[in-house]
Every structure is written in C-alpha cells, then in structure tokens.
Image (tube, rainbow, N blue to C red; front, side):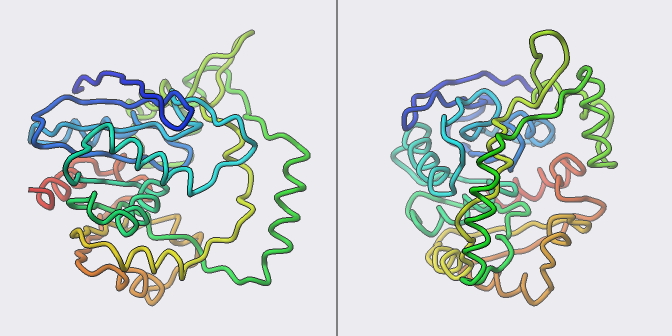
Length: 288
C-alpha cells in the first residue's frame, strides 16, 4: 500500500484531519469521501493510480479523525464551508482537481458551481443529488427531526474488528476480505471495556430537518465551468433506493455545461472499493 501521512488543520473551530499521499506538487488532487465513510477509504483507489498524484483526502467533520461538531445535527452548508477553508490551505492560489464520492460528490458538485474559479476539473462518483422533495413535506420532516432529537442515537457495538469487517462485507458482498479488514480498522475504534464501535459521530444518523431542494442544486450545478466526469455504478443501490429513473438522471446531468459520463460495470455504490483499478484509470485519463 502507498504510504499516507496525517495532517491536522484548525478549520472553522474544529481540528480537521487530512490524509496525504505525497506526490508531485503540480499533480494535486483532493478526494472527498461519502456519508459514514472516512478518508482511508480511498486507499485502494490511490494504490491503483499509475501516476505520482499528490493526493489529499479530508475526514469530514464528525468522521474519522476529525473532531465532532458538538451539535446534534450536520448540515450541507457546513461541508461546503469546510471545503472552502480546506482548499485555501491545500491550494490557495490555483484551481484544484476535485473528486467526490456520494456525499462528497454532492458537496463537490455544489461547490463547483458556487466557487467555479476554484475548480480545475471535477469527478463525481455516485453523487447525483437526493430525491425530489415538495414543500408540503416540511411539517412532517420537522416533526420527525424533533422526535429523533429526543432519543440520542448510538452505535451498535461489535465484538471486534473481524465482526465489523463481516458487517461491511454483508453490506457490500463485492468487498474483498482484506479490504474489509483494512476498512474496519479505520471505520471503527476500541471502546472501554472491550468491543468496537464506528468512529463517526452518531448524530449523522439523524434525519436532516431541511428538505433537499433540487432546483437550488441545479442552479448551483449550472454555474460550474470546470469539465465534469460523472461516474455511476452498474448496480447502484443508492440510485435504486432513491427511485431515480433514467429521465431523472438525464435531467440532473443536463445541468452541467461540460459533462462526460461513464458507468462502471460489476460495481455497486462503493465503486471505489469494488473496482478501484477501473475508477483510477477513469480519473487519471480525465485529469491529465
């Protein structure tokens, strides 16, 4: 495995962790992980890269080795604000290559339109937005959020890292055992008295009080000027769960001015775990 070092920055009142795989400074790329994931999740992708990329991958607030927010909820605007501050540290004077998976792809897509001058090229891995919502859903959503606040979420404990690895493979049958064991060590942490729990803040489990506004997302996407590579998986569980049709996907893709698309075969939502070699080739060919 390629070696990475840990960097820590003070970002918006939080101690933020970034994983850095050193390479040529002129070949910089920033990787953004998804919901309930961590920066180390990109290890297999980085290992598969043929060129000497200088790779930075943060743990989002409340994930991995980054501090928890201290709040009882996490909001999209905070991720966007964190990314802006992080890029000011990583590459303040020039546009940067950005790759985002799932949550990271959604944040990266919004940011690419909000700060178009800051992005050179953007790769979106399975970050195609959220289900369409309607204003009349708001009262029940707020009520559900307040109900969930009354019962603080907790993580189920696992006997050991092997059991956590078993769960990861159950969630993703394509995940190889050695990769599951590697991820378990980064996704989990030891607890006093024995056992292992997920390292992330359980507050991420709470429903978001505000509705996802697709029209606002499209307005941001439309302002992106960087070339975009949109990559989805042949067996995307996320797309199936959100019931996105081909027409829905086409409408979302059409918001970007300069877009290329690709579907990774024999892969699910965690396509960078299932087919890291193919995903690495796609990214490298697009970024050069």
